[in-house]
Image (tube, rainbow, N blue to C red; front, side):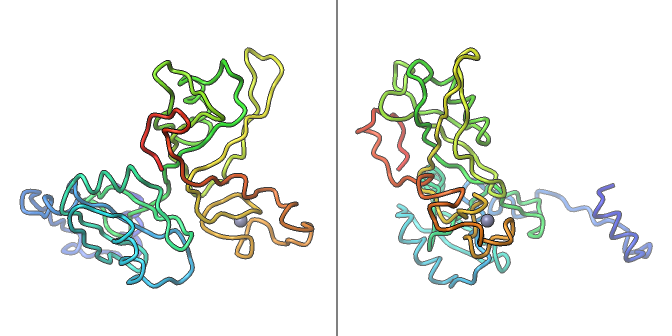
Length: 259
Ligand SMILES: [Zn+2]
């Protein structure tokens, strides 16, 4: 038995009648609507108050969809987004990550079997640039290896010759938003002289320069109790160099459509 159900039994001392389970027939449920391939759960990753109506109208314009979309509130933080066309949903996922007022917009596929309180949005996908890789190490194998260190590897951006030319290699990675961003990694070929490979993140929203986590700034940071030991922004452990803006793949020899 599920732990939470066990807790419920103990706390409420359910009567026999209350314990009798209602079993429903899936065919009678709204499966074709909820959990279909045209829907997403959306949440703005911030504890700060924001105007939901402004958020919805801004997102509606920013997403530039071909067909219609409807936003419905599921709770004070979660929204159910229903697209008229499945391709619009795919476009929204492909062109992410999105942000509103510098806060990250979290997206998740709908699982219609879940209660609203069970829905958790804990990750987001980003294109990460790997800077200063040795020339011979700019391939899919290394991209995957570093991508798996950063988060859950999704794909790598290399040319047809399987080499990433230009200033950096790009990997798409699904990040756990509760964990600090990695600024880079030590790297060596065959245990030789190690070098520092620096990471930067495309379309990175607000993050904390003290702890490196998304979703809050230095003033709201609970990981570090005092900023007095930092003499200024230059002395903070994390900084602007983690963030890079848009990217036109054609100029860098890339092959994907990320912006
Ligand atoms: Zn912080």
